[in-house]
Length: 422
Image 1: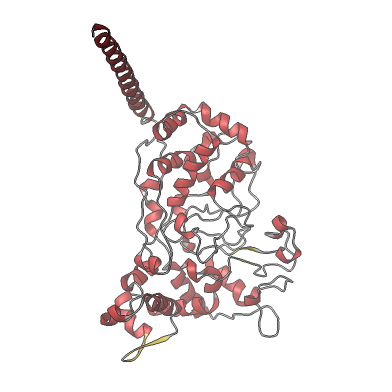
Image 2: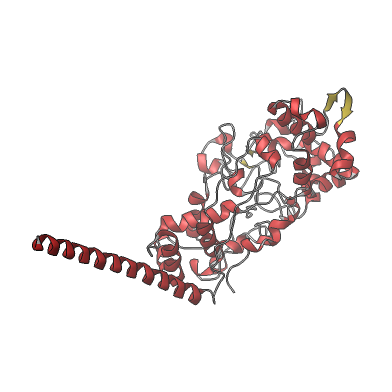
């Protein structure tokens, strides 16, 4: 009996020691994290931000889904995005080519890189529908590729291309890993998120991807107009209208030239102009855009028909575009058709930044499309020649007025996406 009691006492003592040791380690880890948080908070904003964004109802109706964002990883990704220590010369970060108040484009035709180099293509804006994540979710079996030539499927695949490009950030992946480990705050961040201080490449890219996925804005004038009706152009009849009809009514409004019938024939503009607060110029521009541009540049991504096209900038492209990746003659001169979200603040335009403003872009599409073997069929007339859209001076004013309705000003100044370093 005494032996039994003694054995029980020993076991309980060992359990108590083990628990005390475990508790002690937990307390010590929490203390270390708190100490490091205090230490690094003098250098940067170390707080975990809430990056969740509600997708507008009309985009949900159209079939888009908002991916959940990991706030802790995205908050660390924000630091990575702005950290110039992660380049060869300590002068370039992701944010050098993707500036917040330019919708994460940068205003240059070709962007400055390490050691005085410049990039070979214009930096694309990173803001899309309501977030980068929702824009790049699969819709009807289609997922838009990244970069002008479609080399990457996601940020996890794209980011290493920027870090290792000798004209951008100029590192090898091994050098990137070493530079990240030297910055002691990354060990702290990894421990805070993952429970240990390993600064692995996979974790690093995971965090960066989460931050970029959160970028976006859906508070533009166009978004507010569409969300106000959420596809319900039928008013009191909404309860009897099936979901597919609601979806189609968004298309009806967006294209702006279709007449719907609710008891009597009601023109969409007549029904909605007072409600949506669009000017006459914006409404005319919307119709022109729907007739000429939307199949390659829809601000409502499920309505976009083409994600890559040769638009006839040249008869002989010096940059092969997609053809440089696939090696196919049919892909030469083919480039991504980018989202036009926030297009009014992302000049210059095209893969080489050749057009300084939207007026020059419209001049080109009006009379400047060049003959090319791979010119997209949408840009050919009935006789197989380059199409001439022949926009009038007023047409161009109206189109630019409509394009400006796609600007979401909140993302340009949202503190969650700002530089965390002081």
